[in-house]
Length: 108
Image (cartoon, rainbow, N blue to C red; front, top):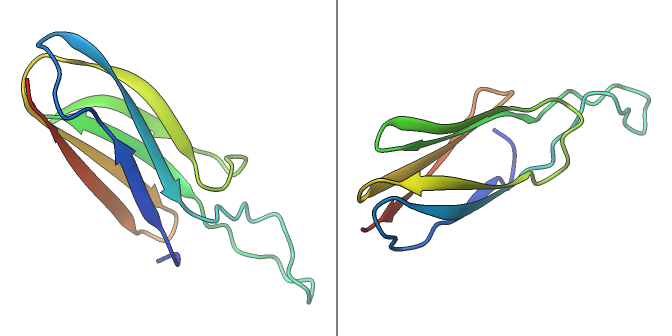
């Protein structure tokens, strides 16, 4: 598990049925590409968040595959239509097998 990984999510607390809302996510992660070397000339192993998903009441909203060129602390902003009250579930998948989750409820 990478050190200091912290997911952050901004979702409005409420919306009207059918309204399109803006969601913002950021995860603190070093995102090592596996292409750099340490002071002794050894390759630093790749360690990135390789996938991000967001589901609303069990239905997929967004699914992003990330590659080594992604920046440190990846930030995503996207829109989603809210048909009903429910919960957004955000999941980040790390190369080392770690999974980081956050959930936010929204009322209608």
